[in-house]
Amino acid sequence: MDWLKGESPKEECGVIGLHTPGVEAARTAFFGLFALQHRGQESAGIAVSDGTVVRMHKDMGLVSQVFNESTLTELPGEMAIGHTRYSTTGASVLRNAQPIFCQSLVGEIAVAHNGNLINADELRAELEAEGEVFDSTSDSEVLARILVRNIGKGPEHAVAEVMRRVKGAYSCTVLMPNLLIGFRDPAGIRPLVVGKVGNGYVMASETCAFGPIGATTLQELAAGEMAIVDDKGLRIACGAQGTSHMCMFEFIYFARPDSHMHGELLYSVRERMGAALSREHPVEADVVIPVPDSGVPAALGYSKESGIPYREGMMKSRYIHRTFIAPDPRMREMGVRMKLTPLREHLEGKRVVLVDDSIVRGTTTRQIVKLLFESGAREVHVRITAPPIKHPCFYGIDMASKGELISAHLSIEELSAHVGATSLGFLSIPGAVASVGAADAGFCLACFNGEYPISVPESAKTGSTDVGQMAVS
Ligand code: SF4
Image (cartoon, rainbow, N blue to C red; front, side, top):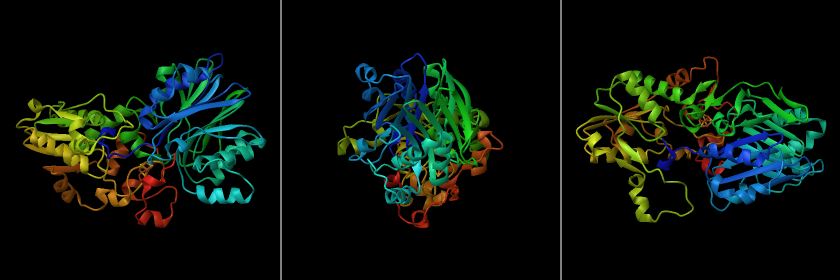
């Protein structure tokens, strides 16, 4: 389900790190970050090192709103990290913007973090008891402080120590005056990929950041792996024995369709998900339409597999962006109509298959189904490429509280009636896994099956915990 629908799961961050000998890194980081904008639209930041000093600029807003010629000029240096963030609470957005920056006895450190820590409070208390003084309330600073305390024994040791102590999801880029590090947690929940750019190196959440800066992919970091760039060049090391549990939602929705993960083009993965959906939930119909834009590859896959023609049934406004101007109540009531315009000529009298990526609360799906019927559709068969979401995410995705997850409370038949569909079908978990095409890869499927690869407190799993409030990075 696309971000425009307002109820979809929100990715929590995009990160980048690069070393570009002979080239100002901030400008390159800007363009890389720009390509990761879909991973977070509320704040952006870049930290650079000129070999001696780490400087930083960050603010609320889109990457293109936070940076301009003048801010980039004030960030000299050939090493940089960057971060783009989605956050959930207005008052704390700027305070929690990243990279986070800490002073320490051994030097300055900037950290960009994608994910969510499970034991940050516990670690903070332990560190404070050991005399550590924190600059912020950010979970990411906990991780940064552990790194800094151990960096004297070398980056490999420091990252291994982070992996030994910190529980949760974390794909990070870290900048010190003469050092760039990227690493993935031992469950490998969030992505991080390493590339080559000119005479230097880049690491980013997704390969879509590489194209605009002329970088090529070297390798995806494995779970528990780190990439270190210093005056000796690039080296990859193991920080902890890991077992991959990569977030299935990266494949279904979050990551850009032109990114590669597990070596697979995500556009093709989503086409295969649509084809599998057609096999699992066939229906007699006249036309297959996507919810634009995120449903397009899966709708094409459904169409090709079923032989039912594909057509666009709605146009999305190209100019709806996250804005700091809240819509007034009347506009909010208009809801989906502000964002999607039905193509009546493509819908009138038709039995429609509507393909989308997920249902979280169900509110927007209901609005879209209503819109299609009002535009003359005879039947609306909803087909969803994510299996039913029944459990909250604790690993950096602002999804909803368990109480709001409609599939946790209604059967598929009840949900079909609730959204007003003629029929409703979800891709199965095995269908989603098989569609990724990486036979030996491991995935996090916790929001579908409740099996959390990194243990979370029982009270949080069963209760009314508002995960939106928990998300920190
Ligand atoms: S719980 Fe769901 S959204 Fe969260 S990391 Fe796992 S698969 Fe991704």
